[in-house]
Length: 332
Length: 279
Image 1 (spheres, rainbow over the protein chains, first blue to last red):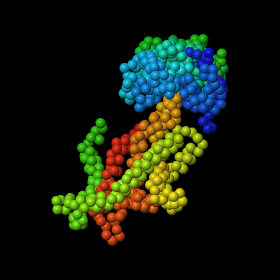
Image 2: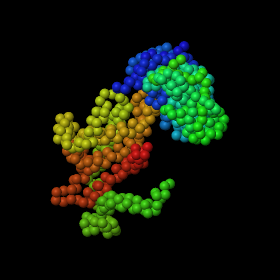
Image 3: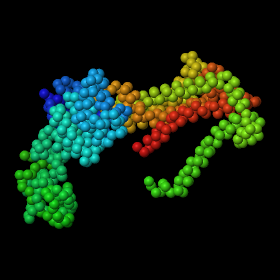
Image 4: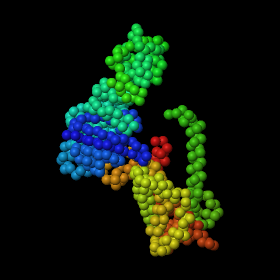
């Protein structure tokens, strides 16, 4: 069954057209990540799905019901916010139970579900605390717990990890992945962090300027980007570009190559001085100025001593390259 | 902490300035209170002397309390002030919530219109208000005063509160909506507690002018049974003879309730004034 179907969804704020003809479907149990730069409309899209914003046109269908005019509480969704958005006057237990109380569920059932969720998220010890007495990571777990107890048809996550520090972000990311396996629920997750997108998603939706650029599994998108934007956005460090002319191609095209597919060699098609070296221990990123828009990044595994200013030759095999026209469309 | 801030010269200078200001501000109040405990002769002989065994006299208080209506005036003032504050805060907060939360046509215009009252003193409309009260038969009722003070306090309340409500996390309100809370529950249970400091600020700014007002009670409710404390105290001030003991005693008593309310609100008030600036 399809958990969510969006057909030609548009959203405008006054004269500003934020979402442009979004068509998308999310299958039952699928983990879908909306990713894109700030201001691309991913959060707005999530809010339209949640019912916090009305779509200007188009159809939103959750679990087989058109929900365009259904209020958020009755859409069968639960949402986790970036700022946790816990109720400051309620303790953890009541924060989680509130939605069920609003639905007038029997007391025993509420208790059972809260107990279940708090066990899953190891929150049992904190049930009587107020949000102010919890750390950031605990607050985010409560926010997730509040979503879990509702047993929604669709989970919505709005950049849930952006407020956490790096170590906690990694842990919580694992926890969300585990939760998805345990609950086998459909989830939509908004982020601007492509690592989160790559590691969590069954399916990534790349958005730019309110349009869907490409939809596919993380590896599909990584290995087979439809255009220059997707190619550049996914992957860290991001893809290198060089005018095709310099490699003997047509004048109006660009060649893209991922940093890990470039080697420093005795002789190569490109050469230039090293402008910066990032030693990460596990691998080394070497930035080489080839006289184009951005320095060319070479990703070497292991530690690689090279001084800035040294001129190096860069080699790569053509089977790892991508060709794009000037307006960013991929040429196969 | 910053070293410059700990510099003893700066600390002394800052405290000196604050103490000086406090003394200047409190001096009139102090003079009123000490003189209210002195006999009439001593008030004029040595206005700044503390009451001693010789000059001590409770005659002022006795006059005020014997003048049986004093408690009624007191009660009237309290009713008018508390009710006006309640309505200012309730309607002000509701209007502010609507203005800050909902997108509708003319939102900005409505906000400006509501804020206009800050710049136009309500007393300009006194004649029209009196006319209106006469026609609606509200003259000489406390309700007339409450209505006028509510109208007078709303513009500033809406202006301050809507600014604060914009700062309340959008996510929190949305979380409430997703959990099925009604807009009223979101307003009363989630948003109002978070803007409590701002509400206290608005309450204090409105409380003192209402409590001290002489203009509207004199015009709209001068009847014996609806006189407020400020108006009631005027009976002791005559054209030819003024009972200073009674006036000073009445004023000393009038300070008490405002001070009590201020103490209640002040902790919130300090947070209200600073939170807008530093957050």
